[in-house]
Length: 386
Image 1 (tube, helix red, strand yellow):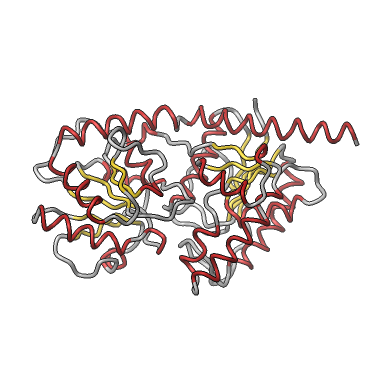
Image 2 (tube, one colour):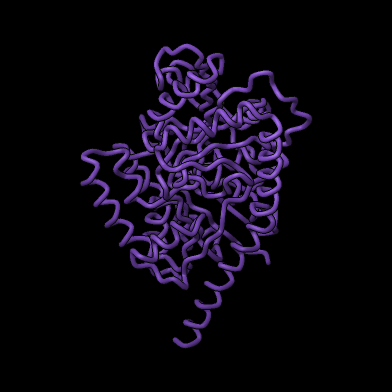
């Protein structure tokens, strides 16, 4: 059914990062399914947004062009300005629902929609108790603040969408009504990552893709590479990120066999994922959903990941899953895949098939629309009783 959906995301857009990719693909899936979608974001981003849905922007904040994730001095100012823009957009667009991404988007939406009778659906990307301590120190103090936020904001939404069951259970434990929490994974347009006739390389590389933030556990990446090099001395580690080459190279320092690969946009990422490689994800932060893993799976590449971040992977079926921070098991998995072309192909093909089925955009859009329908029915019932 066609809806008027106002999607709010208090962040730069576009930006070559997982959260923005999830926002874009969700909006696109709903648009393709027939809904009238508008996206409200910050004034700035990276590159050109060529999406099929209209984009509204908050006012520019002088001197604020940051695109990296995490807290900054200007975010509260940008969020307050976005709240004012959202109030105007609500009057002009008259949406059926407001679909808010991340905590800032939820807070902005709750403030702007107060007293207007427009349902707010919160699309959770993480738990603040898990991630906030990676950005601010002392970690224990800010993890506690994150837990307080988890207890306060999500339960105020009319419904919550969580990308995986563990985050859904966490939000319920922090006070959300179980009946209002829905597990819906991210949509993936897998055809954009068609692998084609990828020929096995004589020596495939290890490949890390994604941002360089602290929660990615990139210190372990250097240890992993050293352990694999002891077994396969000529292996290469490629680090692909939307950052300048010198910033990428600084992650592991000047180290033999490491190649920094700037990937400023999706086209560059797709080109990198067209190579024969073993993708590695050392992340142990559990609450998010690594879009990098879905991209690699869509491209038909095998992924080695720590258990806490391996949400779409099934060990030995669609990927290779190891215990968190188990360097020996991680290196063994990487070496096994590097040395076995047939296993790389089998896991990659199964991963791609899984993504095309479970993360199909039309399937995800239908699941989200069922959440909208339920929330709107409940709102109608309350209005008729009142």
